[in-house]
Length: 160
Image 1 (tube, rainbow, N blue to C red):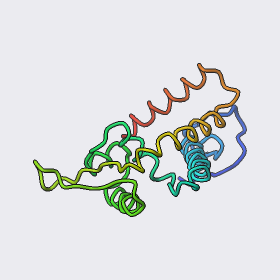
Image 2 (cartoon, rainbow, N blue to C red):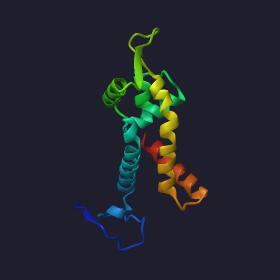
Image 3 (cartoon, rainbow, N blue to C red):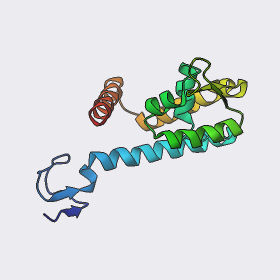
Image 4 (cartoon, rainbow, N blue to C red):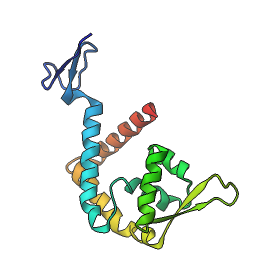
């Protein structure tokens, strides 16, 4: 079957006929992908003055929540491949945000700890993330914001 790709949808938005039409504006995966890139770009522009990348942000979040996670635990929580986690942590270690130590009870495991600089950045970066979230959801009711988060959480669980 040859799929027809289009930017115009003859029917109501959000409908998918299950046939050979694929409408870009109605593609949930495309919309989520674009939103994720725009969120990352907005975060990146705000984090730049602190030499922190948008890719480092989720690792920092989970380490602020629970310092000393293993690299494998971080990969799972952030939903990125372990080699990507390793490269990101290499840069974070180089920039003085984290330090890595072998686990004393399991020498195969490498635990990641925030440095003083990494801990101090929380109070600098969290307001930027809140600002980006507020910008993206401006004009939406609290109920709509909760619904968006609920739907995204549902989709993540379905794909995980």
